Length: 198
Length: 186
Image (tube, rainbow over all chains, first blue to last red; front, side, top):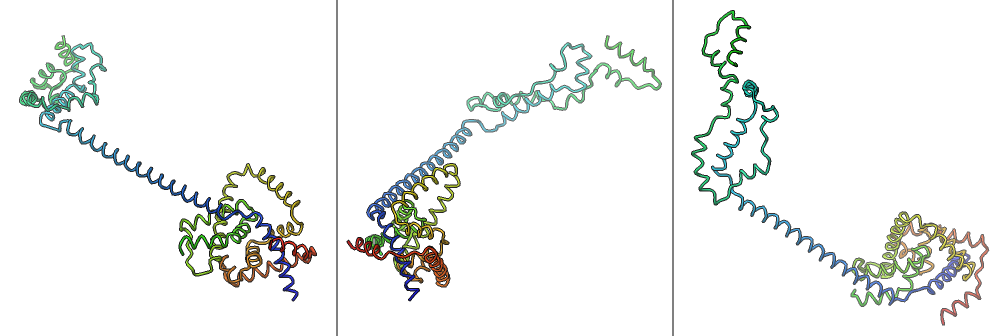
């Protein structure tokens, strides 16, 4: 009985709370309308997101296609590696190797009283652009360039040709052609060298 | 259940849903309305579906409870980020409470204070049983706990309320209650 009375008391307290809440109850239609608005706006937003994603994907595909097309066209326009190009490349490399200063070549230049400095003698390496220019040959020039092959072959020299030559040709000849003598004085040898120089 | 039936059911339980949402939102009316709106949104979108395993009211209350918990978590994170505005918010709440105390009966304000001090599970079970007239089994379903756990929370909560009533010596003014009931009937 006592418990029932307490339950009743609690119930009454909650009823007071209920009445207070009901005073602030928003209408069902209003809450539902807001919810519907939210549904519509959410749908619109998701539709917009989908459109954006589709556009992004399409643009990505377009970029990829354009890039691949550009690369393909570039390959078609530029000439592929041919015998002419290879021959030209070889001659170019030869000229570079030949012009590289070695201790022997430097000594020979010094001996011939060349006024050029050492720095000037060092060959300049080809730049990217010049290399590209040399490698790229237009299709129209193919025939005229093909004629160069025999000339290039005839003018070809081995890259290690300079190793066979000594810096001081005349002295070397003398030394090589004459038989070496034992117990020769260094002073005499120097005099021979100075004579030849003069 | 088609959308028309669903809407009819929602309208039928709208008042009770709002009361439960208020309780879940710690007596914050604006938040409760927002939570209720989100619940309707979930139901309209089909994110929350009634499978008919329990009573519609029980299912709806469970959805409201989960949505309110989500909202509270979100608000908590927002508060962490906007901690510098916290003082202003507190000040506003204080003024609001003071105004409320003027216009409402002292007992009700004290009772609300007591409810706010109760652990959430005890408050929930008491609210569901005494406010929404649900059975303990239904309350357990809404709270997603076992019947035994719900009963324990109910007993502890009721004990706390009993002690409080005895301590304060609160006597329910029956004439006032009668007047309120008449007003409600009108």
